[in-house]
Image (cartoon, rainbow, N blue to C red; front, side, top):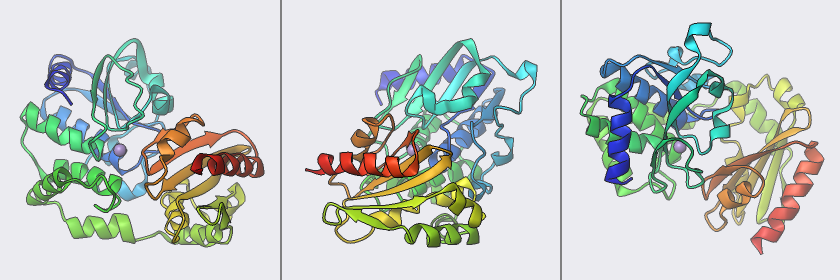
Length: 325
Ligand SMILES: [Mn+2]
């Protein structure tokens, strides 16, 4: 981010009050960590604010400070609508804010803080840095610039975004800078081994039941360079799984030797298929997902198709075969 961008973001925060903090639908660790970090920062600055998300936050992030304060769009009284100052974090485009945008005033101004390369530059003030591993990496810099004191709760938010968006400090975005910030967060009391165990290793029983069903559908194309799994609404019901249980399962498809792109097709509603893409790095799945109306990162992206499962699988696998060659 340029100094000019950082200054504009600081001014937006310092010179305004009554903020609405939002992130993307189906929030991940970086979305939750970023939302709550901004909330903690605004609280320390003496600002009034509300945090909202289109979807419930995954339960596994309940250890983060402020988790219970994030509101759903339906949970609203009249005086809480019409926020003029919006801070959107980790959200690559305006549509991904989803139903949380119902709380915006028609005269809203948005501070867009994000690291997705596909960010379309919405908002009046923008702090966008595609080379950052997580949005919390940018927030670390913003928090230092705004000059508030670090605490364990704030550090846990930053660390959670770093840990989850780097796949446990394993992806190619794990830069020296990421490790420096992580190290600093540990010095503020974050328990790195406990968060790693809780976020990367422990799996709910219902998620394991879902994994069992997903693995039974493993299929391949293009000399096993493409591998996919499917999950129907019936699978989700039988496993007594919730939406968050399917997170990360796509990696089982991608992690097979020789596979360049792993996919998970998940039926989220009748004739609505959410597709997750994971690449070994040789294929830009953000670009591919973008061509289907989705987005994400080079190695991890997604899109939603409105068609039956079989049609969605055929459509995407055929297109992907052409994309590989
Ligand atoms: Mn992120």
